[in-house]
Length: 81
Image (tube, rainbow, N blue to C red; front, top):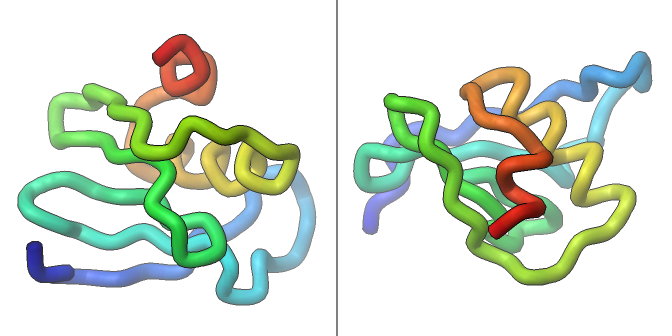
């Protein structure tokens, strides 16, 4: 799939920046969250969350919170998958 738009995510926990380590891209009609260039989650326009990576770290959770705050969905929903 071709990436149509790439943005850098902004922290929602008061920190200044992710310094390019958390991004989101519009791919094939959904937004995909990348943490350290690894696709970890996607959300479609209806807010349906899909888990793309089985791991979970404190840093990835911070990236995902910013992603879901921007595009909809919830970290808890992602963790249940």
